[in-house]
Image 1 (cartoon, rainbow, N blue to C red):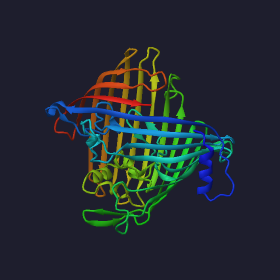
Image 2: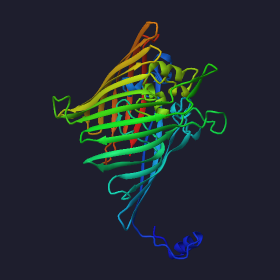
Image 3: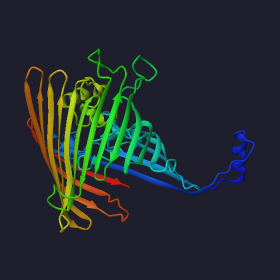
Image 4: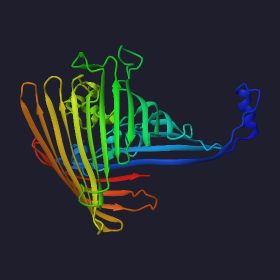
Length: 438
């Protein structure tokens, strides 16, 4: 919308200006993006009652065990001035992903089951620097490093800050950012002695034409976590490193697909659930250290995501990709694992593998299958060891319609067999799920 002369006059008066400013707007645009998944998952062995988080979808694969619903709605306003500089104002509202948020499991079609809040509010400038994009505000950051079959973000550096992306230096594209983040369970910002200490993180990344390198340094003053009524002080600093190799072949054996190889390592505030990430709700509940995860879902709560010692170290390796047959059959897969070495002499680790073969029946119908296996190992400082495993198999038809513009919404009818050595009995899960992005 062009500014009228009356609008310009009012702006000049309100700003106390003696001369009228010149506003030149070359073009403008508006974008609407979003994502949602909505469904219901029932346990046939429990009189078809709701199944609540039956397994680790990030390790076993998400189909047939993804009980949590989610939605995001993003609005974006674009401007370009007569100098060719571009401005993008980005906002995103989304559902509350905290542990007890009813929108994750609720089935009612009303606002009672729909806690919502602002996830992103930030601005981007193109043309402010010769190359790259300058940004500032609250945003998702690093969440493009993602395995869609498992809903696993192997980097999630989201928070509030400022940075530049894609700036060209030495023939390569670099990212630089400062990001602040909060413990998602610590909401008493104006009370107490330790509620105003945010994690400060600095990120540097470079794209070397097929190889990405990321480094992040973190500082959290007075990292105090209350456990069973006792205030314990943990690491105040840490770092992590990530390397990502993009290959246009399937393990070098065929060019009918792709593979991504990821290696990560971190120490202190870069270990456990914080390997490759900041203090986000997603990282709090994502796979990291199984010992820390038990604390988070137990009496300690979300604050235990930062309960790491300065000498704690973690290493993670992943390989995932897809193979595409000439007849339309596709096979996606993921191999991944993490090893955590604690300062107190204990260790814990996990490894998992999943595969998703999809068979096209017709243009609008697929038959999907997905299998996954997860192995866990723990050893305390005294040398006592424990192991466990889980596995699952999911099958079901998927209805789909191609929009012709990229997104393909799906309606899935899924049946899952889920078992493991720590379960009293195997589970048979049935459910329906709609999944869509645009």
